[in-house]
Image: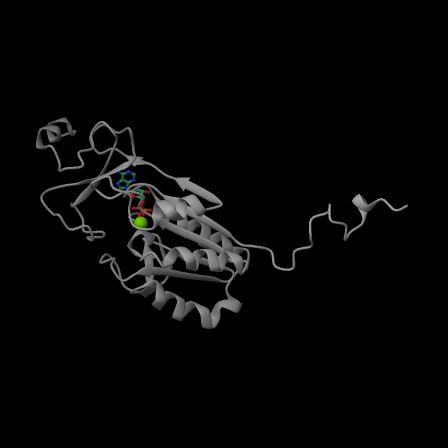
Length: 213
Ligand code: ADP
Ligand code: MG
């Protein structure tokens, strides 16, 4: 009698997998925490490994030109600017056979269709890297990011440096009176804050006294 547990096609052995699933890696944290830097680092390493990379960002970031993502430390990576998830899909799918790694920055500004797209790409064996804010300046969950974190294989939550006390900052503080959620990279409008120095309803001017001269 043969030992069914060692037979390659027995019910007790895992079925051979023709298509290895991909992975979803989410990089999150407040503004200035190094999300774009980390995304750029991972994309550059993938290219060193001769993997083919496609990178996208939403049509919202006013800081730099439309053909790259950029960090506050001026590192850049080529990227395509798209207005919606559907536009991203239309751009990506015709070349998808040639692409192994897909990076998306500022993913918080994409619509909820980004979630099924991420799952589809993983099922097709792609490595999907998504960087974005987890919370708004009002401390609300930001767009699709919390869902993407829940679905990810790997979540990297970065902290910035609190601009009041120098401790680890997990919040994005809105400065001044702007109520606009969608102002990206507009210098002087936001800064990183720790829990103790974060004010979701607006900045406390008294605290500015604590800033080093
Ligand atoms: P994110 O994409 O998370 O907004 P970036 O990758 O664009 O962050 O920028 C990270 C860089 O921002 C840091 O390496 C540092 O040079 C700079 N920086 C400016 N302010 C801060 C801060 N408060 N905390 C940490 N880094 C800061
Ligand atoms: Mg960034």
